[in-house]
Image 1 (cartoon, one colour):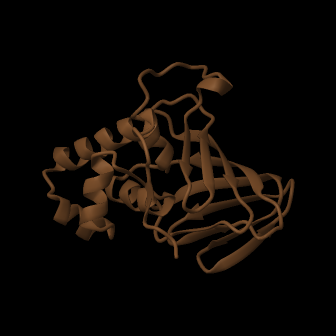
Image 2 (cartoon, rainbow, N blue to C red):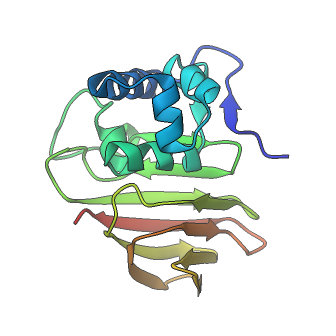
Image 3 (tube, helix red, strand yellow):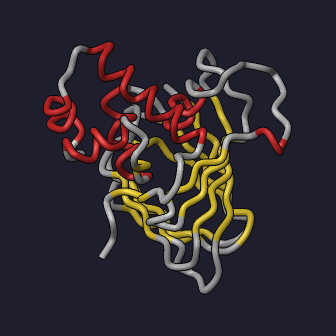
Length: 196
């Protein structure tokens, strides 16, 4: 059975702690109660409360729902928890976020900057990982998915695409999407995202 949230056994990761604070700020800026946000996002009130206190880390699907409600891409939201905006970010300094429950690791490759429309993300999925997003964070979001290693099945607008190493899929996201690592080994890919 898949857990709704990732449990932390010790102190929260610094990125998770800053993300929790930013999620709480975004809700407060809109004057929404946890119940109102739960209705808008489809994420339970208790999960939202625990995520805002950094007691849990939202899954990729839950974070996608919150990004949709707040009109941000995941990279945009994660860039807001960074402390500075520099034109160069070294590999060792790139923000890495992990959804342990689904086997998804996400690295923000592009230097964080909220004013720009394009960004690069490296994604890694463990063999058998399956992530479904019920809506895009921003309707009409342009994505380019370039598989560097392994195989990836991507479904968008009820059309399934099987991508092997070196394949690239370009699409605009208007509805649900699904990323599945169907191969016997994990998959590594680059996701180029361009906000409309």
